[in-house]
Length: 576
Image 1 (cartoon, one colour):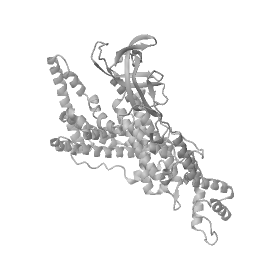
Image 2 (cartoon, rainbow, N blue to C red; image 1 turned 90 degrees about the horizontal axis):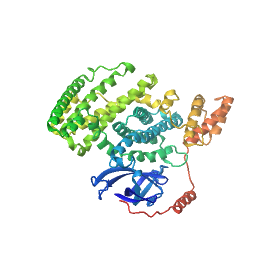
Image 3 (cartoon, one colour; image 1 turned 60 degrees about the horizontal axis):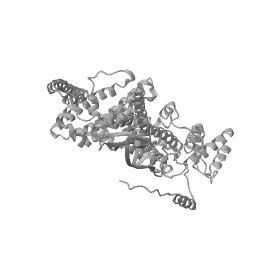
Image 4 (spheres, rainbow, N blue to C red; image 1 turned 135 degrees about the vertical axis):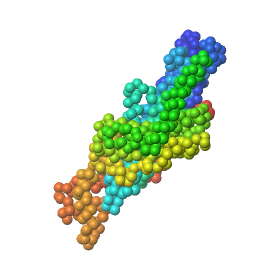
């Protein structure tokens, strides 16, 4: 509420602010609290409307009446979060961001800040999680053996490793593309929404697949577990800075279709002009150009659909002409469907959130495919990345086709379903089946084999070889396994061909009897004398990497009692 109050011994114009936030980032430790508030001026102290609107303010923590509660524990992570509240806290106009002039302009400020912040923090979190999952899970799959073979050689495991590597590559490409926009001073509100939604969603996919590969090693909580905390933290990325359901259903297409359309904004501006004759003249000119634009997109979508993109001229660099053609085809189809949606559904789009969500998915897959091509182009088309590029493009195109098909068969105006299907899929929604098993196996291999490509996928991720660290333990074992691959192969062959009477009691698999196994191998000449210590070290590390944490019952009870004893109750107003 706009009012007058005392500040530093003087009567000044300011705001009396009341708020009650359930959770806000850094609230338990923040010395300055940022709030978006709704401002009213019932006494007309500013001489304008009673309802001024959304405004952004900064309130120092030590201001009288400001309270902050105890710290939250979001999904058992160290993410700093907590409640804050205040009742009729007086602040001067100086604490409005931008001063009194910016009263009521907070919504624009929020959107601009959100478009920047959402392009950086959570997309980087998703990408970082993918990089660490690729590094650690690929290493674990290589070191973990069953039936004398690395589990990375099993097709079922490869099927899980494949999306870990592929999605991580896609996330990194989209992150770099969007961050590049920020570097040029652009505020990419739609791309930031696409990136936040998709990267956090792919983070969930990647971590889930990683947990499947690591299996029992991943479900036992403790200092040895390198995935558990990431698995717990996934819902934080999905939820904060605009929940993914909201972002997908309302923001990406619902707002983006209008903001990015070449004519809609001009038509809205023309319709709002005071001079009616000039408004009609301007609107008609824009509308006919809009109509021509829609007709051109319809014809282009039909011709490219009939030719499966072959009528489109595309660049030859990189030898990915098929991907370029399909992207051109679906870009035209998406433009057509956008126009048809806006013309037929119009203002009712907000209520058609399934349609808006499917159209958002179409835009998302187009964006990620474009990002992958751009990244590969900027890196000079390195041939070792081709399997990842092909996998990413084929995956995006398959999912794009499915999203567009679902949007058409569920289009809210039934009479338009068959015309849209005819224009977009004149030969049927077929032909884009995604990556085959051969390509999938190559992509899975990219995070298992110790190559520059594996380092490229995980670049920027934290790396340590410390065997006492949860990640370092598996990376150290991975290195030792590579260094002793030939020795271990000889050992396995010797064990298979052994004379059971001569080696009775010797363990056949890596386990607690590995010293006896190495001693036998050395005595039999399976490994050379100068190799024994190295083999012993490797087998010890490989055994250690599969072990999990265990706690005594009394220790767990003591930990529980300690947690209860430190629990603190903070009095605060009831929550909505």
